[in-house]
Length: 301
Image (tube, rainbow, N blue to C red; front, top):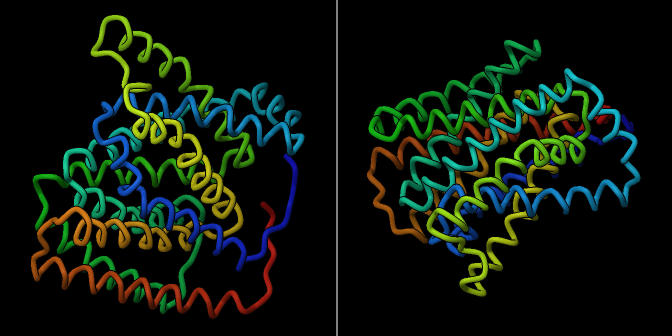
C-alpha cells in the first residue's frame, strides 16, 4: 500500500468535510425523492465505480488494486464492508423519503457512541477525562431521545451499527481509501446491474431519463457517495477511531436542523433539551481535541 502522511489537523478537516456533506445529504436527496430506494442505491453504486477507477488511474494505484484483488482476507473484509454500506444507504434513503428525518438524525447521534465503543473494545484506544465527560453528557441526551422514539428506534440503531462496523472494517483493512471503495463498488455492481435489468424488464421501469433534474440527481449520486466516503476513510486511517466517532455528531446536527427548518418536522421541548445536551458534549469534546492537535503529530495513512 502506498504510504503518505497526514497531519492531525488535516485529518480533522477531512473528517469535518465528510460530515458536512453527509449532513446536507437530505437536501440533495430531494432531487431523487421519487426514485425508488433500491433503484437509487443501484445507480449510486454504478456511478461511484467509474469515478473511483478514474482516481486510481490518475494516481497510478492500479498495482495496489491488483494486490488487494489477490488478497483473499482483504477481499472478504471489503465484501463485508460493502454489504454494510449498502444496508446503510438503503435504510437512510428510505428514512428521508418517508419523512423519518429525525429517526435518521437519531441514528447518527447513536453512531458516535457506537464508534467510540468499538474503538475502545477492538482497537484499545483511550479517552481523556474531558472526553469521557463529553461522552457521558452525550449519552444522557441520546438515551432521552431514544426513549421518545421507540417506534422508529430500529431505524436509528440499524443505521448506527451498520456504519459504525463499516468504519471499523475500513480503518483496519489492508486497502487504501480509494481502492477500498472501488472494490466495494465492484462487489455491489453485479447486484445493482441485476436489479436494474429486472426493474427495466419486469419491474416498474427505471427512473433514469424520465426527468432532467431527477436524472441529474441520480448521476450525482456517484460523487455524493465517493467524496465523503473517501474523506472519511482517509481521516479514519490517520485519527483514533474514538475521535472519529465523536466527530460524527456534526452530520446529524445538520440533519436535525434541516428536519426542523427545511422539512418542517415538529420539535418538542424535550427533544430540544436532549439535542442541547448533545451539542454541549460535542463542543467540549472538539475543544479538547483542538487543544491536543496543537501538539505536532503525524500518523501514517
